[in-house]
Image 1 (spheres, one colour):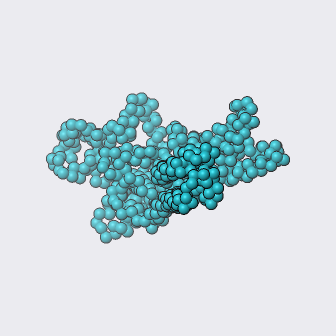
Image 2 (cartoon, one colour):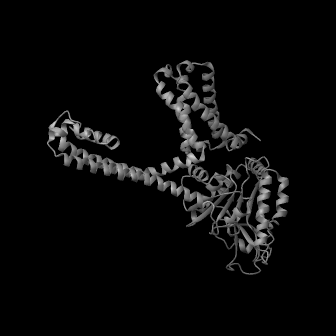
Image 3 (cartoon, one colour):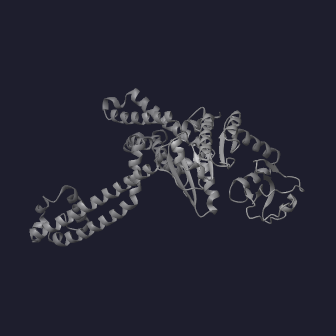
Length: 491
């Protein structure tokens, strides 16, 4: 395991997250202790403060390296930007002379804001904050209406009370709006003593109607609007959480089982590949919290284009959860390794075994047991691949990633131009490799392979797959074609 892989493993470890949460709480306690003049300059307190700062620095570097070579993705997450700024501000005393004295308030603010990181680490707090953030667009319009209300009543107050006394709290629109702001919080019981109101000659009944109507509109109605919007967003999030346990009824979707750092790249490529479709669906089933999955994907991937992603919380090894995502109606299934588990290959084997056993039960009375599940799984140890091939009866497409990457690198070294070919085939932006079956009987029976190759003007035939899942690349030109085969084409 190299250093980059170690950083990836640490960054998603629950132990690492729990340790950082403990450090954040400790940082908050130290800030409170440092308010005591007798303990502020204690060597132990200062040493702990420095240690906490460097722990946060190490946390940032681990997360940056976990995304290598695309470390810039770290800054796609608003929480990560917040963490980076807080740590950077805390380093001001090291780079700016006298920063500790001139920017003491900023430094203390940065240190106390470390506690806000708890919202990132604790899922329930994150849900509350997320609901508040999602409410901001609606709240913006409420604030605009509230400012308009304050302005209207400010103009009325100035005309009614301000023109009779230049020293009054209602002598101009700005002062009137400011006074109304305090009225909305503290009430208007003492406002009758203002000289502007006394000298205006306005009837106490009219004054009462003015402030009662303002209080009703500003406090009761608008305050309830704020509460209603936030409560509505909380209800939506809870509904999303509830839906994460419901059965998924759609078909022809791509099902991803498990969660790892690979998922972001996999989803990106699937979105790119699905762009030619009007509507495509991805379902992710993992043990991670449903809201955390949504936020992680949305922070990394800004545009889903034509793809709709559904999240389901649960273990792929739980047969009830597995059935709930409609696996055997899926177009394809991808099994990701559990990077927190040292025995990640066992996790993949168990998942494949669960899929295979359930598939056999679903089709126990069917003659079409040989139908492919179209299961793709990745292994870190090649010896386990034979076991899964036997379990799934060769229905799964298995990848030994280390071996595959090593071969690609070796081929590219021998033939440097292959790097452009690989980029073209794997980027989903130009030509890709497809399996094509002649369902409309376009190819005449008893055709030779050489004749088939000439039938395609904008595609290149490179081989075929027979009904026994055997692959044949560059077959003999005079080989007779079987219409049950699938052509392998670059298109």
